[in-house]
Image 1 (cartoon, rainbow, N blue to C red):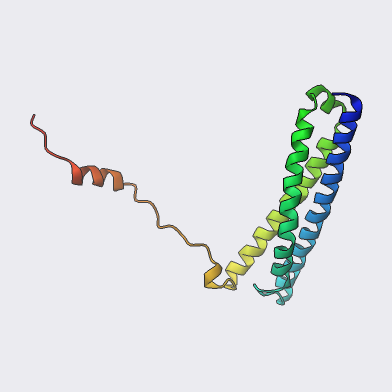
Image 2 (image 1 turned 180 degrees about the vertical axis):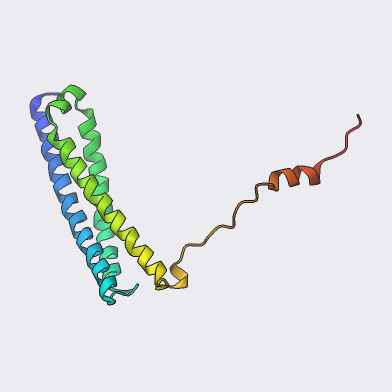
Length: 149
């Protein structure tokens, strides 16, 4: 792989990462606004933040698909060549850190909703009953046949 190919892959990856970072920053702004709304008592489950997240979801999904393709191209570059250009890895790490921040803040918001009882019953996750650890042994006992000894 020659240096012009590597440069083109890096440029394309950088563009995709920048676009994805902008989307994640917009998502973070929505989640933080949602969090501030909870503090102020203004945010509801069907509020504008939920709708904004729904609108951003297809864009984030498309961006992730593009990043996967760009990452495949990036991984085709020999490892020693990738090590010479750490800026891509640093940029990927920044985007990943930002995305983790969004996930954590959104999880905190969900906890607030649950604690305040503001999640409609239809939106709550269904909880599986706890597994019965003795189920298998009971099954064997019921289906056990006596064998001649």
